[in-house]
Amino acid sequence: MRRKSQSCHLAANRFGRVWVYPIGLIAALGTLLAWHAKAVVETDLRRDATVDAVEQVMPSVVNIATSRQVQRDNPQDEAFRRWLELMRRLARGDGAPPVEEPIKGIVGSGVIIDEEGYVLTNNHVVENADRIQVQLWDGREYEAQRLLRTDQKDLALLKIVRRPGDKAFRPIRLAKDDDLLLGETVITVGNPFGLGGSVSRGILSSKNRRAMPGNEKLYFPDWLQTDADINPGNSGGPLINLRGEVIGINVAIYGQGQGMGLGFAIPVKQISAALSDFFTLEWTASLWFGARLKAAPYPLTVLEVKPNSPAERAGLQVGQEVIEVNGKPVHGLVEFNELVAGSAEHRANLTVQENGARRTLRADLMPMLESLQLLLQRQLGLSVQTLVGAKAEQLQLKPGEGLVVSATEKNSPAERAQIQTGFLLTTIDGKPVSDLVNAANALRSKSAGERVQLTLLVPRLVNGQLVQLQPATAIVVVR
Image (cartoon, rainbow, N blue to C red; front, side, top):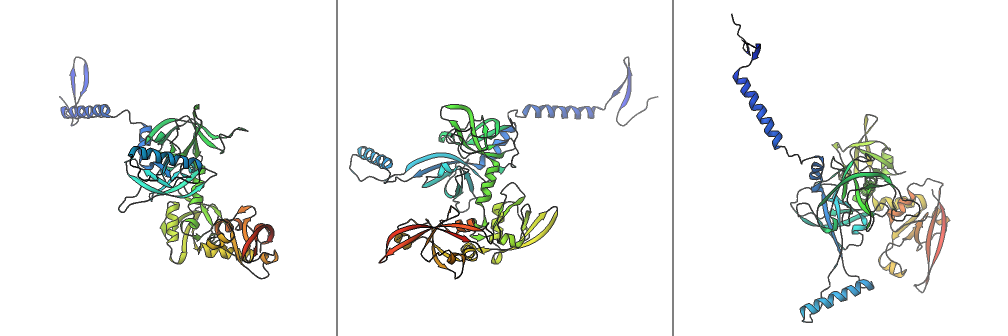
């Protein structure tokens, strides 16, 4: 007798008993194997982690071109301008009056860090530019505005001038601070020699390269070093890892014609710190908040709280994570600033998290000029005005070279130091005070009873005409 089975049956032959499967199952298995073999054949073996990372970041990298107008008070520029005029007149042969043209500046690279069009690059790429243009990976070209810079880290913040109907730009992702592996694969993306988007691959050769004593070529500490090609024009472009995250901003090579395989980048830790300095409510919205938050990556962490600031009075503390503003989740520093600045009557409810516990704080912000004047009055008994217009001309100074004392409070620290109306305040504890923000920053960390040194210029006028600006120093006790 033979036993039947739904899935298979036994058959005997001279080799013994074997399993025999239904024809339909064998056919299906054959089809599956053929599909798998075809899929393996069609897989593009060239598509590795490097290609994936480059494709992620390309829409976030921009080419930068700068130009500046001829400066007639510069002998070199004047000679160049005259040469241009002569060449144009000879070419036309008509003696037509020359047309002044801009001198083209250097080309460089940059990286989009926010969908609103904020771009990060090196300060040395744009510092002398009168005009800045950026080109996206898809060929679109835009004008860009220079917003802020930091000489200490050679970084500058730009913003693309968007056109009506433009979609949001694609920002790049920042790696975590110090998330670096010595020897890991890294990729540079940028605009070397003005040739357009270019990619080079290498390894991370050093995580904290420092200058040797007497070596002026490496004048910034803790740069990243890589053997990926960095050439003129790569400056300001990103150095990325295989996740497509920025670990550095390309900044320099060791020397022209030497030091092959020695390229340097500003590390992400310094980039993040610079962005925390750039994106403050004091700058973006002219509101006094008094706290710095970590720019990236999420979560937003409080890095610093100024004494006697609205942030401190609200109860904000270093180390707390800000997760909501007015009940809305917040994931980035730009978004945080926009939500706080848009709060009714400048009152923002901040939900913070610390050690797993949540609580809501209320911050009452103040307009910058009002708050800074109030700070100077509270601590020193001074009222000041920025040096502009006719007053600057009268004192034969440039606007921004100090703050003019407009009033001193009776029995205040300023009056006891014999500071008078009309004096020009130029430094506080050696720090230049070109505007109210500088003055307030120099005083915010001071506590009652501390001494500060003020440098002043005392004008001596005869018949309303300036005769002399006499330097003076005053020691004032903060109240």
